[in-house]
Length: 99
Image (cartoon, rainbow, N blue to C red; front, side, top):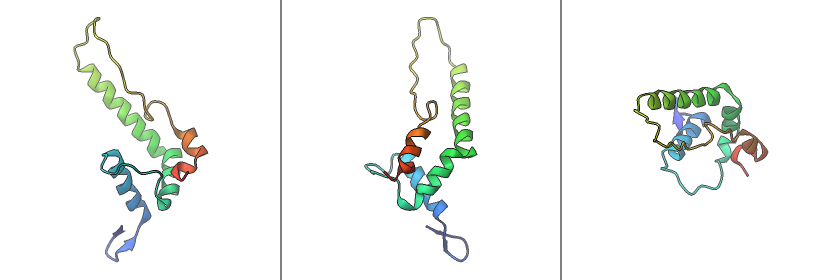
């Protein structure tokens, strides 16, 4: 993707667009992270933004559950994914998606 007045290629923007497409399930059936995005994904997962995103998701889930009228007979099953159990060791062992 090109951006800015001069139309310069900015890999970070393309990677963010790819990530959004995957998360929205508009990009499916991919077998690996695009080559240009491997560094971006690695930096994201070991950086502050991943921790901030995880905290935001957990906080919003907590606030949502607090609004529910839960009785002692209700059963809850929470989906455990990378926002709760980090996939960081897996990603690091597999080149942040290139393998």
